[in-house]
Length: 229
Ligand code: AMP
Image 1: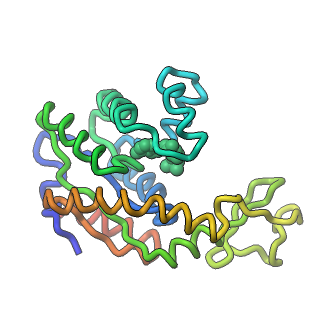
Image 2 (image 1 turned 30 degrees about the horizontal axis):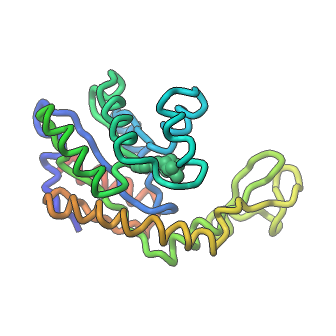
Image 3 (image 1 turned 120 degrees about the vertical axis):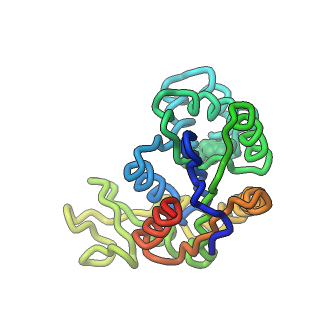
């Protein structure tokens, strides 16, 4: 299901800048980890970068703080400035997997403009498409031991005894924002702007639209193959 000729995923002499697009639970972060390791690219995860800036107390962190605390998107200009800076760092010299950015059509347009001024462009953007009911099931199946932090999943990695940690016998808990109703609400907010980003890259003829309703490894292999083609 690829629209992109991924043969020019990293045109000669240019670094590979690969946006991964997907909703919460689509496996985007996991794929970004895997791809950045396999391909020797920086992994630029917007949420992590913002959280780091908050911890470090940088001016960027201060600008982002109020928005993050409310669970709102940080304004586009702040977000774009952060990524422009990250992309100019030596760590991204060979390229980067963009995880969580662009998250709005305006961010995608601004990224095109920044890259265009440097003679660069996005040659492939990967959309990991997972049906909403499956996303809700994946995220709301996550439980964690409050004492030792061991994660479990009702379907893919349940504890031996329901609701009890295998390691220390503590009663497992669920993060508030992993509850099914909260996950649905998060998706309702997240999906429309995400689909605008997908549409942006589809129109540009660089979208690789992948079926993400499959095991993580399979999706990862498909991404690697389409980049090698
Ligand atoms: P995440 O870890 O991806 O859920 O991101 C945590 C928070 O960082 C979000 O709730 C937003 O406040 C902010 N954030 C992450 N990515 C972006 C982005 N591309 N644009 C604006 N805000 C973002």
